[in-house]
Image (cartoon, rainbow, N blue to C red; front, side):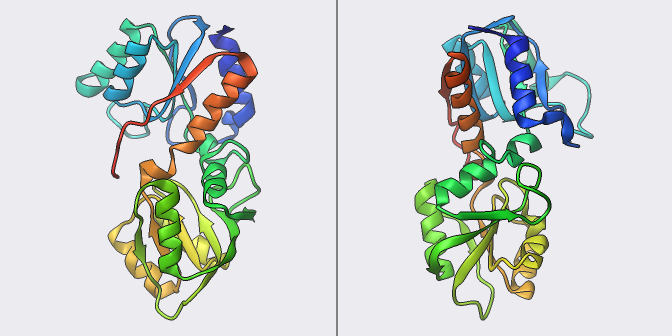
Length: 253
């Protein structure tokens, strides 16, 4: 058992949460009971995940996508009201980390994705490791873009959408950023990557990839961001002896 205040302080410190200028509130978003014994983690604080947390009698829900995003309506009505009501009625704490969890050099989404895909980490295109979001690395061996796409699909359990750049037969150097980072493709190309992996794709991404000459793989926003929150939950279990359970609410996007 650990006090909520101690657990939140430990996570804020580990992830250096105050250092990030973000689109949302990082840290404790909804307060529940003071003592934490059970921590459930998941990607997004959707109603299905909240119901799982309530049924399991979780004391704290740890997510990557929480609430209170910049420019969203502030009124607590409709879906937002139902979600927050579920937390309050069941006295569940909601703890959310967005960019700090993307960037963390050990437990972050990008760190975990690179580890899962077997990439050799070389640094970041937009800052130092632990702060930057566009990670750079090398493949164990050169791959054709189709082979790289199959490798990503096998490791993530989701077939990526591949946009091949003309005239680029092999990939040796890659860049990646989980989630909705498709517009960082130019930074990846400027850093010398031959392929860029993210979660989503926009109409413009196809043209940018072809005209820049860099392969693009859209591997799924949810699929690429399942691993950081699990790693953080497992760290809490080891560090503080809480019981941790990750729940993967299926999302094809």
